[in-house]
Length: 417
Image (cartoon, rainbow, N blue to C red; front, side, top):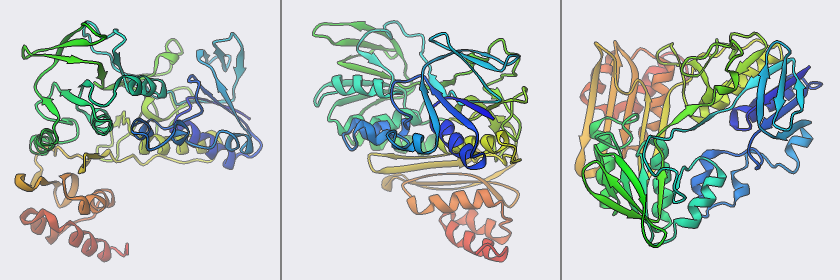
């Protein structure tokens, strides 16, 4: 059996390892289009602040792991997928045949239509190559503008501050991480960052970037102000890399459409990770979740099915945990609530503390928190276990900090402990 995996991120690597366990005799090939060994993008901020070398971002030891697992690594771009001939064509003109194919091509940064975004002083922060460019320009004392204060932007933010730059953040939303936190929580995070010396512009956008003297650029904002910078980093979201399947007839929506087995509309082609439109635990809908836990979950399930060992995806909980200069924030599931649902909230602005619980009936379906790290594990547990809270719902409505007590009481009744 010949398995080909296009994509060398966490989904692809976990899939290859799972395939090797499930099918010891199979031929397994990972094809990645970057010159580095498979690595984790989530490790890039640690590289930016010199906590790790580049090699510290590698998912596995490239010197031994893949050869020991008899997994072939190919560092080339795939130009074409022919699902009729069951072949992939590489950039060097060679082709390879497959029995089963996994598309794990991930996503790429979105480039907003801003004049000047192609200047050499402007970079994304998505690859190790991007990180090297940032390290060169983000020297201590230099002015840096970060476009976007979403989840990825806020991870980069911390690394930039630790590099000692003078940082300005521009976010179109009225708060930081608007797709993760509500106005109260996102507002607390903004005030925390401002208190740490970061210049934060919310409800604001970048109109243009233009070259200036001394290898600097001018960044013109929608509020009429102008910032000078040695470096501009664009972190305005990502888009699934689905283009490789154009013309194949495989169904694509927001991402590549898959079933519970991570199988596409072509029985011999699977998809996993940021590129796949998999099932969401909370809604039961098929959505793209661009987070690493989902990617690895997808990769494992796809591989089991590629090897003929039936496994169905039960859905991944949408979750984000963010540490921003010492203030931890998180959101799980349907943190924004549902029509007809109820919510409980604790808001202590002076102490930078916030908890919001979202209920449907007596189930906890979503939650968000700032500055209350002791609640992170139980919030996830209460949502994923789908326990009936019973009388505990009323107690949590009065005091949302009682989540640990509620979890222990409700799960003991079900015999989970």
